[in-house]
Length: 328
Image (cartoon, rainbow, N blue to C red):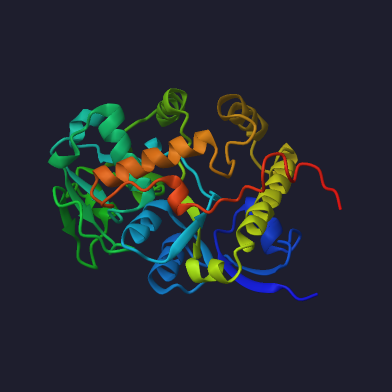
């Protein structure tokens, strides 16, 4: 029986391991899963060069690409989510004690359009009242997709030999919004600290208020791939669902993870976020999540219009109650 060969590039996550190792196979598809690249490289290679049939990409960069007319669609599979309050860093000599103290400051970024950064700017503005237009943004990387908006933002492009982490530690920057933990913090450099020492409390409060566990990445597909075989979207969606279910079943066992209080963290997650905080599909909760991000991207000048979700996501419905019980 012949199968359709397709290439997907994504992160090497537990929730996709069954797909990459072949334990889960999408019906009718020979899926080649590429995981040996970092996320920013993957985003660039897919969105700039169209190198793969589909790829996990930055949600904000995908929105920019769509806004500019690139022939891409999205399957509602969200492989990466993350709360970000703990990734706002400050120079400890600058007297920054609260979000309001960021007004009028020099803040470093890896790139302006990173989904993590779009979320953080939006949260700072809407949840803490920080006036973004007063901040000068210093960007280290070139943008995944060039954009002409954000005209009201003060954006400085750093030369190749500059590092926002070093500039923060040396006091050339007052703060830094970053997608990951930064070297100076890991090295316990006293010149650098988190804006929110108890960031977990801030993240729980944000989720309690909004119901949002921020979506970072989306599964994007080249339109020509879908037009040739429209049926693949639903089959891919269900394959990722099965892979996630297998991973969650395995990870429920505290013996598989070498952390002392792992089971307690698992139970806290269930208590706060529910049984499947990584759920796929355009559920009501995911719609609120994505529409909030789209609103932030529009306010920050990354996209010209706020697209309806049903315009950019493929419908993976099989009809009400269909697929719940298999019958030949």
